[in-house]
Length: 304
Length: 134
Image 1 (cartoon, rainbow over the protein chains, first blue to last red):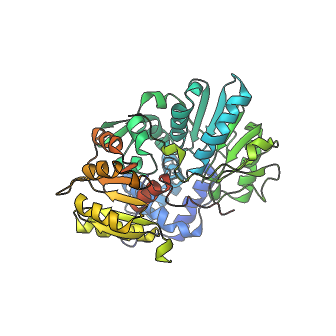
Image 2 (image 1 turned 90 degrees about the vertical axis):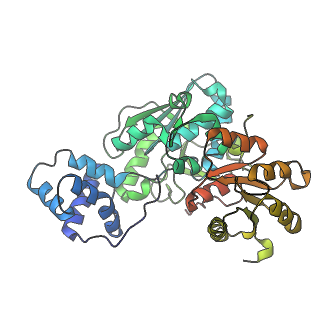
């Protein structure tokens, strides 16, 4: 989703309204909005207030405090927790997947299904990126790999399931050969093809609530969402991830996130330029430094 | 930054406004930049300023268009290391295919945003990926 551009100076709303919104978001999602997020509340909640027939955020909050919240809580929480994402964001985790992890898993797992989880998947670009790598480079895994993608917000899951993207979204991070191979152009939209869509199962899931029963995953992507949680919530989530990550599984976080100081059961590992985390000890072969690529292998042109 | 150590990019577009916009972005990314208004001029600049790392190529230009420029460059082994990215308003899959088949390494549909150009440069291996800060 494009970076949000602030227009003119936002209208003021009270600290009490800001605190109300923050508490609602925290109680429902575990996400702690910092005191510097007034602009974001204005940007994302003002339209909801207007749609609900209120002159401003303060009036909206006043109505919520007096009367039933109804569906507004969901709308507010989803508006404040929607994460920005893009295809092949940060690149190196996907290079690690292609060059090291998937080949090793193919070797070590025999015919067992492989499971990959993308948490906080937002509008779907991350799980679809993984699906495209598998389809392009490991065709034998299609049908054997299960990519599960979850998010709290149903609005973004709807978008993700549809697999329809704007020109800006496909410009951002998607190699042109993959645009050619995996997308159809329909008017001003770019639709990912059905074969890739079928590789990803999207589900609603709140990371801070009780998790549904899940089979173990070989790889977990939980990138750029932990930064929004309190330390206690981060610890709890990492503890839960340990419960669903295979002993030789790998966890990818965002570039400014870490398990260090939060959960000592995780060990930091480098795969090329990517940092990831494991729990069960990893065979020496898996920790070898990948040859840094000048030209990202993901870019390798498919035959036209 | 020492200009001699900076990567070099050739910006090819018949619109001065677009050249300036791309110039500003590429300089922010640490590139030394050169300009040309069409494919003929671009070939001259390429020869004079070689080695270069990247050419940003508009499609529709007078004298020699972007596709013809790409075909010329790819027909010359001396420029094999040059990355070519088409940067154009033309946004049909057919034309993307033509450009890639002619030898373009990447294709960026206009309008160009800083984030999308940055991501393309990372794909081409011309820009460092975000550093892990922990």
